[in-house]
Image 1 (cartoon, rainbow, N blue to C red):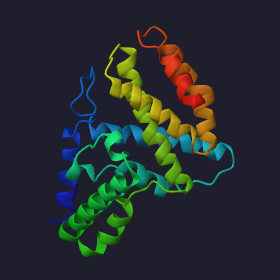
Image 2: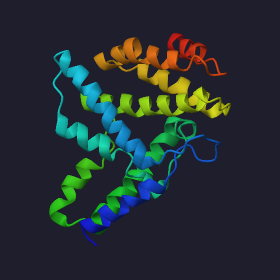
Image 3: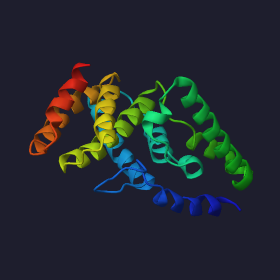
Image 4: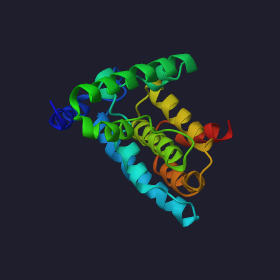
Length: 209
């Protein structure tokens, strides 16, 4: 009981593998994904601040580091499944939030429950921090899919993941998105030029859609 139960549960995030059921050259756990999202978000937020945008760093760290905690209870559900329909996505989110709320009520001391509810909530919203989280989360999909395609993995799911993540990133209105598309993505595409998969073409199709 108590916060010890929460700390102990974090080990489970190391055992949940992303993109289950598909051949991968590299396995990625939800725990590793969450750590990378925090790193992306830090730099994205710095870019926003360079353009005069005010960032709530405490909120940013809370929502990026904990954004996938609920997967301890429901696992990593593939993005195409989660986003098959708005209704399904809403239902999955409702289930996840309900289980997390029950966990907090059951295990977290009352004086800390409000804090945990704030920290473990769905952080993607229209705030600057929520949009940065969305971009950082999709960036990790880009990098995970790119790493597989660059090594010649022909599993269609990685092409779809890469393309859809880019489409979603470019739709988000932030200075850091402009910077990513103009300065970071071209380096990534050049790095993948030796891949048997035409990453440049997939990228251009995504950005022009």
